[in-house]
Image (tube, rainbow, N blue to C red; front, side, top):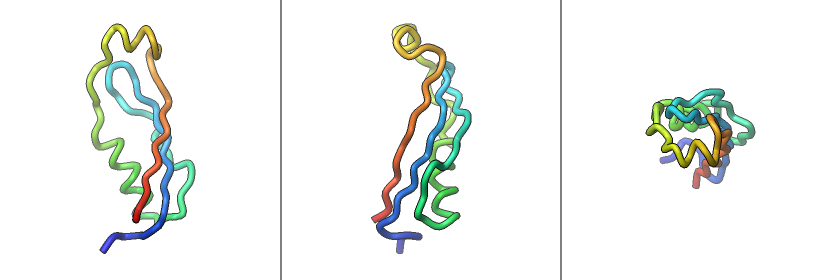
Length: 73
């Protein structure tokens, strides 16, 4: 049984060119506290990601702020 059903958690974070993740935060949630923490953790625990290619750095710069929405159903 899922922790929450029909809920949404929106997480924002900054991805650095070296693959590091910083500034992870929940922007919006109608889920339980534990579900929100799990969504944050799904991003932060995967760090570091792969280093960006020179082309990616040219397009995105040294970092990019991303927003991800998690939907429980």
